Structures are given as structure tokens and as C-alpha cells.
Figure 1: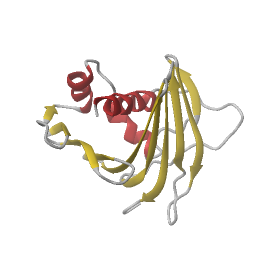
Figure 2: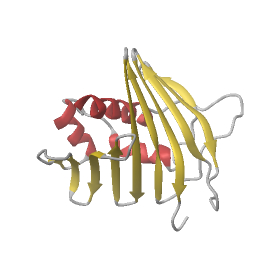
Figure 3: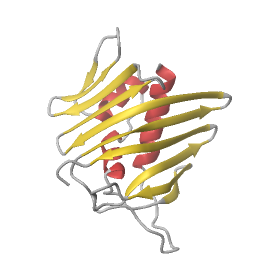
Figure 4: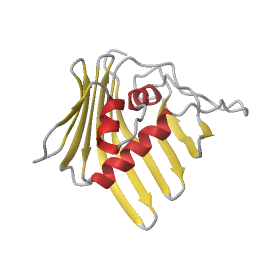
Length: 178
């Protein structure tokens, strides 16, 4: 479980990096949506180890709830951010709490990660599609406009650094009150 959480934090770090705008005139993401529910899959690889997860991410301006599940749907962990702070909940484990997702990452992984900005990339507030930041290669390889949506949102994001690679695929978007 700790490996998955570390890889997820790696994904957040890569997704939060500011990347340069494409110079080829390609489409960008956006405009931002204030709230979303995204469901999909995450594939993680570190060396010879490969893991697959499902996720469900609910975002509102005041909160985020990210549920990580096995490929068959069993809940593995939940990250929550709201007015009371941030919490990591795992079955049969004590809750780990902090004032923010960044401080929670510091507690869990012993390093601060800017987890709060990942939702911005997902909701289209970060329009960039590719780049390299601090050794991380980040690419939005596919985007789409969800049904009844007005925003272009990511569908596939890939990132890697060294021998760690991940791929996030959004299978379903729900954009309430867009």
C-alpha cells in the first residue's frame, strides 16, 4: 500500500509542475470548471514492479475526495481535503491528518508535495499539454470535451522520472453545475 501511495504522490508532484506552453499551436485544456467528479484508472511502474488502481476524484472549490481502489473496486485508501484540513484514511489503519495536503504529504512521505494544485490540472485550470520540469516528463496525450461540457479536460496524462512512470486515464467525467 505504501508503494502505491508513494507513486500516487509522485503523480501529484508531476501533475503540479508548471510546464511550458506548446509551440505547435496544439489545443490546450480549459476553461476551468468549478467542480467535477472524475473516475478512471492509474497504471504505475517502477522498475519491474507494475501496479494498477482505479480512482474516483470529487472536487469542489472547498474540498477534494480521492478514493483509490483495486482494479476490482475494493477501497484501498482515501485522501480528503476540506475546511478541517487533509486526511489519509486506510482500512484498519489510524487516520493521518494535517492542515493541508502538502503537510499531509510531508508526514506520510517525508517531503512536501504541492498536492493542492493537481485538481487544477484535472479541471482545466492549467492549460499546458506537455513539458519537462525538474526531470519529470509530463504529457497530456489525450483530451476531450465531456458530454454536455464546455471545457476541454484531460483524458490521458503520462509522466515519468527515472524508473518511475505512471499513466492516468479518466474514463468518466461528471460536471455538475458547469
